[in-house]
Image 1 (cartoon, rainbow, N blue to C red):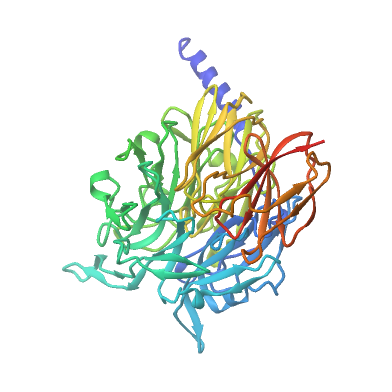
Image 2 (image 1 turned 180 degrees about the horizontal axis):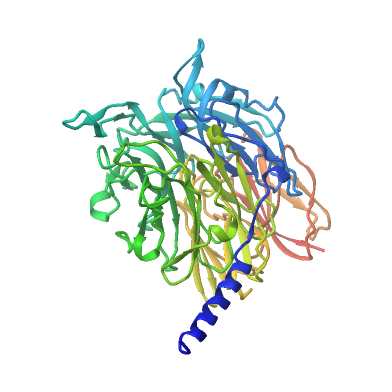
Length: 622
């Protein structure tokens, strides 16, 4: 007895310390102005996307509503949101059964457009298969639906999408995940249902033609998988510089297992490597998360399921199932009924440098042989940094009774820790929950907003590697589709642990040279725009552009812009390459440098008519 007492005291002490420090999240939805419920037919859908639609520096929130009208919440910058006006152009969503949402700057004009996936469209009082909706951001707080003229005409059951620049031309293409077209079942000798024999719509790959038009090329490029997809991600699993497609397929034991399509760039095709990599798991794939959970420099993947979820550790391009060892199976909701996972994410909730894990759970009826639990709480796992995770759900008060579906993370209040939203279905009285992170453990952090120039402006597909005295971390900016029906913030967030020291940041831009940046401080958010000194199409020699005075104080005069080349953009960078200021140029004129810049040297770049070589000049501020 005397030998066990010290051990018991030590355990209780650690448990008390952990419990007091491990309650960082407060449910703040109503306080923040989020009053939303998802009216989902068939219990399917429930998408969320964090993005800055009005470029004010605060991430806004789009929520699909199923059979109701979708809602775009504008971030007020004070911890609250306000629904965008009814006249903002999103009215067409009320005529569709919307499922998922994803956003991207599809025309590289500096603002995010919105893609909404749908299952059905209201027609003559009935629901028929619907097309997907594409909303062009007009740059003034309004949107225009252009899906048909853009070429997105297929009427299918779409449940998500990823933006991918598969051909590395600087324009984002669209990959759409599709689900069941015809239901059918397998029957036993007693007439009972023992399996599924559904037919599923093939997935769609739309090549960006420029000018906001698209051509469907999925079948021609070997990307039209015909599994019953529920989620996926465009992710460079093998770190060869191009994004691949990792698909989570429903009904995998009976129809098509999960699929990994390797991009064969520069050959315009995809190759199915599911079997040779170990990614082709037969499961009821629902959602997917990616992140470097073990700090080995490559991306690991977590796929949610009806029953046991799967954590795939990346071993330089092949995968090992380490779910049981990591203690993140999330298989059973109780002793006899299965858990059902949906939206999911790896993200560092406590800024200790290790990617933690969240899973949104929620029932969906299934076969008698696959009983699913009515009460199926979400799961929050803390990464222990040794290959294992600890379930801290109860300690954070997240054991609600609702049917969870999509989820997405963001630092919506810009306080340096990551918050997240969970879309719950209204069928059991559920409502969308916004979890605000109030962790106060003294850990440091740094954030980066990457902006492509030759690469796509959103920098989807870019790999950011942060170097610190304690090691390195990697982060891939995803083009959405992961989680379930949702899109996380595109913010590159690194927790730094107990040390604020940062050496450098390396960015592997998609289709462009790697760049390395220095001079960062913890506790800051930096915007980094891609610098490409050599363009294939150049401005005329000297460009005839004149910039004065130099040195300057608060104003610069820019003259000599070429007529007929389209709008121009002036960008000011620090000598370390960090974007510090930018503006649009309509005509030759004086421009105000509306930024609190310290004295010193800056690089002024002037772009005109998209991806051409910029005019560059070193300027000095008094």
